[in-house]
Amino acid sequence: MLPIPAIDIQNGKCVRLKMGDLESTKIYYEKPVEAAEFWIKKGTKRLHIVDLDGALQGSSVNLEVILEIRNAFPDLEIQLGGGIRNSKTIKSYFKNKINFLILGSVAIKEKNFFIEACNNYPNKIILGLDAKRGFVSAEAWTEMSNIKALDLVKDYSSLPINSIIYTDISKDGMMGGPNIEETLELANFSSIPIIASGGVRNLEDLKLLSETKKVYGAICGKSLYEGTLDLGKALDFFKKK
Image (cartoon, rainbow, N blue to C red; front, top):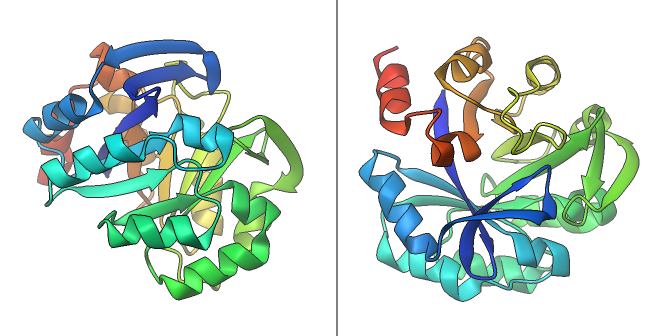
């Protein structure tokens, strides 16, 4: 199990939201590069970065801030999502040495584009599944679909996808614990490795998620920023297992 610190960027700042509500912003760092430095010093070798403004607008809004992190820490693995809607943006991010790109909305709304991206960049694309009651959403969680997460995974199961990030929207930023049941259901259904997201509170939640080997990572946001999860201790715990 790999705990992955999250840096959500809104208006150039490192923030956390509740259930994706853009009005629930709490600023933790004025400069996201300082957040990145803090988590690196705690031992992380990987960051989950989301351009929140980009996700809403459908384009790269906080590119300068993201590249500041990339250039400051060249050995850091970065998985990036938010507003990645066309091949030009994908090419630009990979050219700038972002390691993995998370595609969510286009996987729902532009399936041919998503398939092409996965085939053009094998093992570099992460499928972002943001769901509520098992149905996936798009456009920064502002649009709900009638597509079940399991059905979407089935459609893409033969593609060279790096992993799937499964987020329960109702859990995200609420500190109420992750949706263990749905995450494990997806993990047991899919041959693609799963990264859990949404609601992780503490080390005990990570232990529960780690009970199946198919869930290999968990994105940790508010729990880290509020101090209910100690990243260094979590990394050490799973390193020893």
